[in-house]
Image (spheres, rainbow, N blue to C red):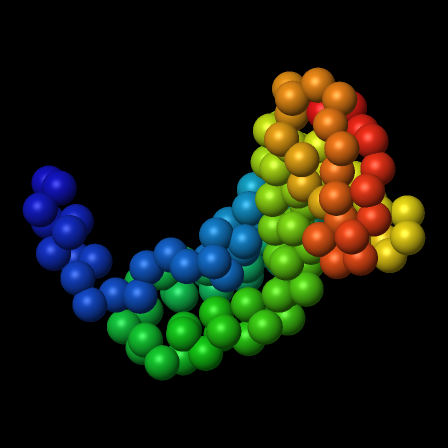
Length: 131
């Protein structure tokens, strides 16, 4: 059975970032529609489901690739902002981030070193901080 599915999906576009987003929106709207019960929303959900699965099973790579690139271009700012926040919180686990009072340069200091004297790499200002 697994081989039959793999053979069927061979040459098909499959799921990409736009497809994942569409499926997530579809799931959220289905849950919302359970409480609302709107026929108009049912029609929209059906059309969205057909569009999503037509992209997954499509053999037209260029059209689906162009749609995905359009989606990635439109959402690049949002994805970058979330990526920066995620990276910042990952760094904050192991480092303190201080700001130089003279030039505003951000300085990353490892945690757990006690009281240390920090020298700004940009302006040379020295200040004492606890890490």
